[in-house]
Length: 259
Image (cartoon, rainbow, N blue to C red; front, top):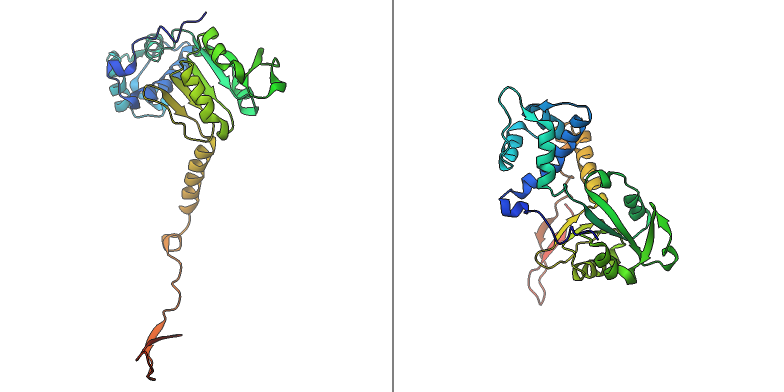
């Protein structure tokens, strides 16, 4: 039985590494892995920063938290950095993962070959549809949600992936947490409520597309003259207020007349 959930390395929090730095470590690892595959022995901070999409000063600061400062005139040892970052991210051990919700997205995640090469093993697939029970997806038989807790315990699952419809996500999350899982990757289009000590990462593809749409709109707007792009809509004609000359029981009343 895998024991990833019970034997975790020292966390980044305990080492005092900022969360922003932790979020960039996978970017560095991806760039370094590509260099390693091309048998590149060393890399400068400028080259690696460019490949990762960050500035070199930020990269050097991030690596200082790992105790890695490179060698002047030589740069960083690629293989050693791959090991350092992998160790810091906890990727030097096996992390069993359970995917709940085997629709189109869940099935695509199950078939993604990048998990195994990065230290993650899809240990189980779970879905509420009885017709899927026993059906193999990516070589793994789908199990019914009634077995969720048993599946988590039997496989020593460390990380839960939620790919269910929004309406079912919170209930699935609650059951995963109750089963002992403290790290969840949420693909459902909803915000999950979790107790303290449970980490949730949300992946919302529609939000990412909306952000891209914003940038596309800004790019298109660069070709529009500023006065046309920013001019507010024309205001409606102002109404003039006149005094009524007739008197009545209410006295003189203001009357709104077209300008």
